[in-house]
Length: 225
Image (cartoon, rainbow, N blue to C red):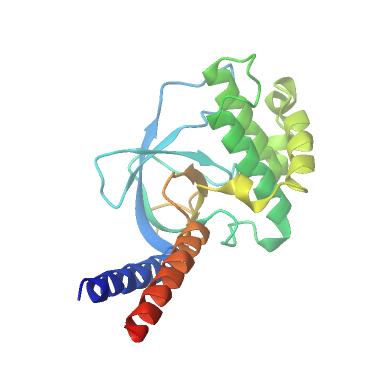
């Protein structure tokens, strides 16, 4: 009887993982709550972190913008599709997949303070923000400040890294892509990159596979008894 209960519990756990895996790409409501402080390092635009309330949460989420040519205003709301970084098609389409991969690596390096450890935290955030903007926007690349801080060199370095980086290098990264027509005002909002330590679907699938194997072994044991 005890073995049967264990089998049932494993079966329920597997089904929960399957449902979580399938439902991971989801839609959320984003409310832009503003930036931390003023313009950093002499740059003409404020960058990371952009703070958001996700689905009305009072706990704000810091995100990195990747779309220089779009704009948002404090208090604006819209819906966005949230996907694991390499599983969705972002605002700029599938032809920019290498740029997205480079952006993800730049963002993770900034979070780990390995983009340029000689810089202060604020300077490194500014460098990462402009480098990511430059991957997707010629307008950003043509700004004098882009060249002054060396964002172009970062882009070149990380595009090279992205060409060979394994998918595991992007674990935890999320893409918040705006859904056109859902914004409370203005044009199409910006797209954002975030990070969450919650296991991604690939990890859930691996765990589910292990549970399925264990459940099968228990069932075979029950059949023999």
